[in-house]
Image 1 (cartoon, rainbow over the protein chains, first blue to last red):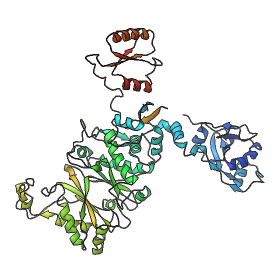
Image 2 (image 1 turned 45 degrees about the horizontal axis):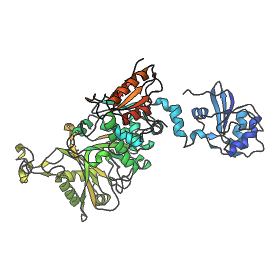
Image 3 (image 1 turned 120 degrees about the vertical axis):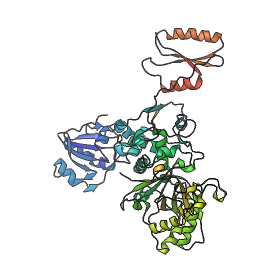
Image 4 (image 1 turned 180 degrees about the vertical axis):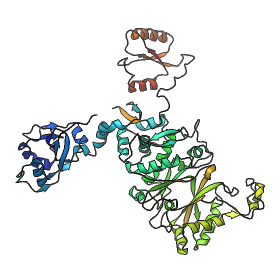
Length: 477
Length: 92
């Protein structure tokens, strides 16, 4: 719909249901102006007002408050004041004694064009042209939620129907144009636009402020390094684990404290889910018959697993900082991980003992008999982190201590050793020490609730160039 | 009220769906007879309806508002959910 122009001269936008508009109404008969009325076409009395019935004028000229007085020259707005500010009205109208009996200032009311009950429909009507996706009409007899299942568009849970109104509202969460390409999504190698990500973010239940985080995570998983195609196809139970860092995590409500890896917080539940819906719906990465996801068991985190690092009282530099993100910036790091498991040591009081028990748990990631095969993410609980802090160990020192403990003689890794058929080839038999993890294959994150001398281990997938590298991306606007 | 959603997929697949395989027998079928509002379509469909009735085959009659536009979504939905086959009278 084309943008209606404004006539030259003075223009006033009012609505009857506004005490300030009623107050200034008598003035509007005293000077020449084009008056647009939003609600009552008979208002103001004695003025031949133009009824902005569909709010097109108000919408396209960003009227947020009524009354608004504008001065237009050659079709271009040159001055504007909102509400009643006597000095502004006198200056713009050029009438030195305008409103002499009125107060100096009185705030206006909200324009109908920004009424929360109307704004989504107005955005769809006037800005809907930016949307390029195919529109699917639903029959009266169809259930909005059931139809998403019938069309095979969900991850198995209900999704929010992505109406144009909701998608346009989601797009207000980013400054990026709707048609900008975000990434190429495997397995179908489809260029995904901001709009398609926004549609899937709506379906996942995201708020507009979550969208930049979803976009960054989509960019991250769609890199050759992360290899979402392989992560999808593998029989192993991994999916993208999204760790959020930066001051924006609190602003959008991302949880890194109690139950950080669990349910109950919208940002955590929906950001990761939106990423998976993009991979599923745009990239074609579906499980089930005929699908490409061949996981033997999968894990519940494949619905979407996203959490914040608990940075405010972490004894360590953040995961993002350790990966080169400048202080104060928001970032996501994606890691191909399985479901988390808990590591308990309630009696540990030294950092060294903690490194020992965590290493013991980490040695069992997937199997205790394969070395340099899998990465892992260690989610250190605050009470465990306190023990490390008391020792004065920083991130690198603590990880180094764990790496040293995640090693055993080559003969102990061999196939058949320890009564376990799986294992490493015989050429390692004489190696004095073989590490469990490749350098950089262990990620450390500080997260969890105040209470509990617990940590969590998230086993990874084939690490590095042979499988998946963790990838960090800055979160944009 | 008609509601609209936006396609969340890559839209690589055609919007048309594959035709349902043609059944071998008419026994047990519910046949939609769709008049697209072209001339004499009703004459053709009346005869088809008569022939099917002689065989004991259930039929339901439907009519598009106009042959120049696709069938309304509600009509398509009703046919799809109440019938197993369709015979459409396409031409004059």
